[in-house]
Length: 370
Image: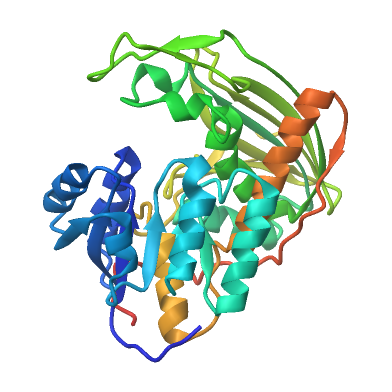
């Protein structure tokens, strides 16, 4: 990793789909980043998105890879393309931020990280929600002993499914998608920050129907195939001795999202929604009649702060936090969950990661640092 350059880090984006709107809206406001190019398989779509967010350049993936003024490329392609596109980014001599999951299988994840190491480049992986003030403050509270020794966790994410609102939801119901691979990264990443590496998982799953119908947009009424479990419930065993029970579902008319509760020897803490960056924390002690609510006290943040953390590491030295190693461990946990669903047996998680310290309380992506 080189710190020879100075000033804001040049950023490119590959993939001008729906999630790019959130990334670009945020990254354009972070002064340590300079978003210079948007690429997509459909050049017209890349141009439209670039124009909307005042990004000067747009075009093909190869054009993005050829840009000398781009140091980090944010890979927002669909999950099954993450490994191939990520490898091409590294081969072009650029650092890569992959949207979650890091890849869709461990072999390609290991290969991607090995390629980065051999090239002196870094890989970052979504989600970066755990870097937001909400989850960072929850982590600090737990680490200073506010709930005693953390023991167990309860997780719930359930909705009717994204086919009701997403204009192109097919990939969310195919390998690399489903509620497990689409939503578990937020919850498992947050749990890993609190409990450390996973040891194994026992899970069950089901699929409500072989097809879904698109509810909104130009493809409304179109029917597509479902090839993954749309309901997964799992018991996660952590090497620290902690245990978590989790449900991930696209099969519930009753939406319940953002539920992550950590029970300790002295109190129970409810974190903000792990798919959000800000939010109140709630804590209750044994015998208390109501929760105490604690604000996160931080600035508003959004998708792309992991890229800021990478950029600051590039310019100032040190390590970034939403690492490819962490992304691979979370991927290993999800793959073990899927294997457990198929085998109906306990499946171990061999991957691990090195925990990183919490962000400083005054960390602010809207301030110029590099």
